[in-house]
Image 1 (cartoon, helix red, strand yellow):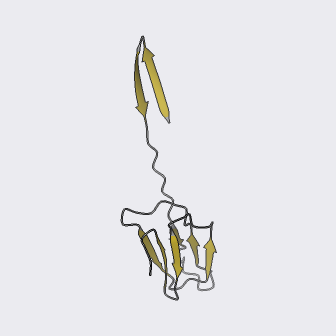
Image 2 (tube, rainbow, N blue to C red; image 1 turned 90 degrees about the horizontal axis):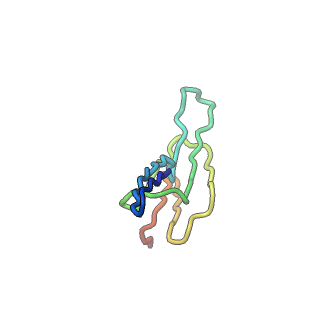
Image 3 (cartoon, rainbow, N blue to C red; image 1 turned 180 degrees about the vertical axis):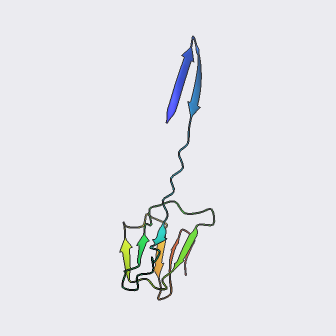
Length: 91
């Protein structure tokens, strides 16, 4: 969102940066219903934190939703106990 104000030859630019709270990994929180599915959402196109890696436990999860292909340089690692999204080199 931006606003441009002008007077004569001078311009003043005022802008606002919006923060988006989407996460590369998200896990449903159980509401106490033992038959309820617990999904892990994998969004590899979302911004990663400064360290470049996000990890989430798969404990209790019954399903994973992969919401898009990772962009170049981003790797998604799915293991039996965790999911990792990273832009750091992997071996």
